[in-house]
Length: 131
Image (spheres, rainbow, N blue to C red):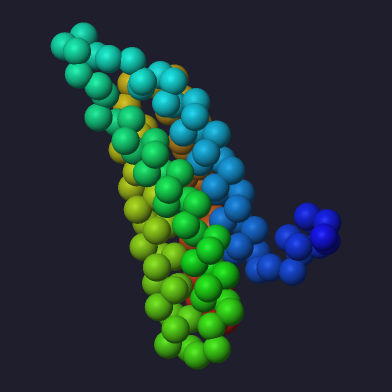
């Protein structure tokens, strides 16, 4: 089994940033979930709690889609997976914006995630041109 640092270096910068985004999204989601898990005064659950799961699900899908794009032999297939990565990153960004409107102490960390997503988009643009 090879060490983690050598595996990380064998992949592209966009892949490494996707892993960072996943880790950050998971931690933020866990933090915000505790604030939103309680019932509201009218007895219903906070609808924003679903966005916490969405950011984790979308961020967990980024890295495998990047690997699929990089490992495809044909350009058309690569661009199909790259488009999927673009859609996921856009959805992730929108869900971060939605969560920022939630009533939670953890929403202060969401601008950090959005900043990382902007960096990811820059890397992703260059990465798509190299496919």
